[in-house]
Amino acid sequence: MSAKFVNVDRDTPYILPPDMREWVPKDHLVHFILDAVDQLDLRTAQVNERGSGAAQYPPGMMLALLIYSYATGTFSSRQMERSTYDHVPVRFLCADTHPDHDTLCTFRVRNEALLKQSFARIVQMAAQCGILKVGSITVAIDGTKILANASKHSAVSYAYAGEKMEQLKLEIDQLLQKAEQADSTPLQDGLSIPVEIQRRSKRLEKLAQARAEIEARAALGEKQVEYEEKMKKRQAQEEATGKKIGGRRPKPPSGKPEDKAQYNFTEPHSRIMKTRTGFEQSYNAQAAVEIESRLIVAPPLTNDPVDKEQLTKTLNAVVAEAGPVGGALVDSGYFSEKEIRQAEGTAPGSQPTGVRVLCAIQRQGHGRTIAPLEKRDNPPAPKEDALFTEHMAHRVATQEGRLLYKQRQQTVEPVFGIIKEAMGFRRFSLRGLVKVRLEWTLVTLAYNVKRLFHLKARFAC
Image (tube, rainbow, N blue to C red; front, side, top):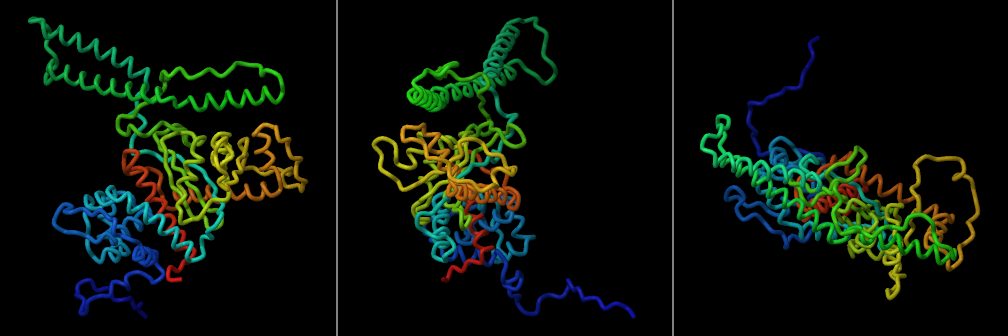
């Protein structure tokens, strides 16, 4: 008996218009995103007046397309344009319209205010649904390195730039001398002395600009804060023990750039940062994650490779819709007495903020041994005049502190894992610190919406 196959007919046209809602299941992410965007305030949207033609697309559809694309791993505007033709959920989202990549890119870069407002509104909607419990929330804060839209091979060090400039000056002098000689040997076919001089002059100008930028960074005193903190800690230890600490005293920064300080011609705002795969041209993306809902409530971003000065900036970036912060969990990379006291409001002349910080003093391994599993009493509290490090170590070592601090590793690190692995976001598409911050807001907005979708949030409640 012959098999009965389903009839596949690509030639007969539709007799009746198709219902686009039947193209995707009712419980699909695209329906959820459209429902969420319907409740956002789009009055601040900056629209592309023309795009590449006369077509004008509704800002709600454009924003929904960006959120869905980032949530599903599509970050290029050209790929988004292609998906409006060959991806069924996107075709449904756009109602079979096809905004071009230029219109999409322009809408994205011009709507920083809309993205920030939408991020805050989604957090507010999560609170209204009961998923985010507002009021003295506890956040886990961490940073992750995300690649810039530039190659590290486009960077030049301060020392190398100086050496190359001297070499270029010498070559230009040689070419000028050659041009003055009537009987000089001609250059290879297709090459001319004026063109070669112009090419080297432009390169010389760019290298001079790179060295000037590196010198300006050094003049700002990027290492001055670190030096002052080391001296303050050293002085406190000497006062506590009554003895001078041996060893070399920290040297104050000279204000001159280091030979290895680098400048990237393609993406000047980015920096060479240490990642799991080595040193890469990157940005330091921060996130404050509410530990119960695992929603991101603050998405700041910096080009500073270290996290030591990011605690108060991240806490200040927590959206008001999430409510006041009651606790902050950070790893040893954030340890700074000045930052922690400022965050808690215990610095001289400041007012208490109601925030209690738990910060590891030393880097803690992920492996488990028997000793930490054994039940033990709380350690004795340090004296009031003890070093700040001793007080912080006692906070984390108490039973309450240990249980709470465990939440840091279990919340913020998985969030970065989802963004990089599940969503596939490992490199920024935009360039420049302002635009990269805008894109990071869009990434975290897409993460929050997708998180609420998996938690089956109902915005009508």
